[in-house]
Amino acid sequence: MSSSITVQAGLMIERILSLEIVRVTERAAVSSARLRGRGNEKAADQAAVDAMRRELNKLPIDGTVVIGEGERDEAPMLFIGETVGNKKGPKVDIAVDPLEGTTLCAKDMPGAIAVMAMAEGGTLLNAPDVYMEKIAIGPGYPAGTVDLDASIEDNIRALAKAKGVKPEEITALILDRPRHADMIAGVRRIGAAVHLITDGDVAGVIHTTDPKNTGIDIYMGIGGAPEGVLAAAALRCIGGQMQGRLVLDTDEKRARAAKMGVKDPKKKYDMKDMVRGDCLVAATGVTTGSMLRGVRFEKDRIYTHTVVMRSITGTVRWIEAEHRQLEKFHLD
Ligand code: VTB
Image (tube, rainbow, N blue to C red; front, side):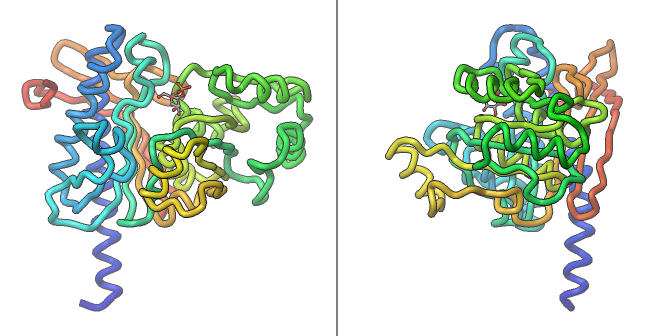
């Protein structure tokens, strides 16, 4: 087979898979949505994990989970290194967060999603389950407009200048945590606004890509590293800039990271270091948020709302699905 035919075949498979991954996040979302507001984070997460794993294993891929529920000893399913798929397809890296925002789901608060990314094998950053410092802005700004190593004030000023507005017209989205007290104060000191979220920073980063509708210009702060890679994959599809740096503040964390191939513990990753090739990303709403509507159950129908993105073309599809035949939907 000539190489161009191989490439064509690869692209075709990738196009088909972009619909397949929608099924995966839809089913994870439906399963966890049944447990919305029940105050049981673990059960909701487990339901999403089970559904996601079952669906992933039906896909025509030779997949390896590189971002998953945790490292092998702490996660029985979808652990880092687990292989998924029927092996009759391309070698791919899989990043999953079956229920991003378990607390949001358990409390039936806005913004819980089921999310996954798929990329060519060996192209996603194998991030350990530690924190990551992150900064992200949407598309349309010159490269290097903001930087993880610049001061908060300088970043806000530079972003405002690039947008052609005053710093007062900039809104930063930050996870509401005590560790961000100085950051929040810094943003406010320069006159910009802070939009706080309790959880869910994958969606938080994605908000920066559509400031007109979300009101969010910049994401900053420390959240999970796995969520950072998922967010970078989404940004790679939609456009935007992101940097991340693992927080490896103990010997134990540095050793774990080294075992996963991290050579420089202080490395500042940009979006293309975290996601080194083309990827697909899908996210389905579990609870209604500003980006996605949550799952809606009716007597014999289930409604889901999903966004699926392909970096190769930059296409972003919003899919509203009406599902029937509940008994065949593998909800339990
Ligand atoms: C982050 C964020 C997630 O949990 O991982 C956060 O990326 C963890 O921060 O979206 P804390 O340890 O301070 O809670 C989420 O908000 C939800 O899982």
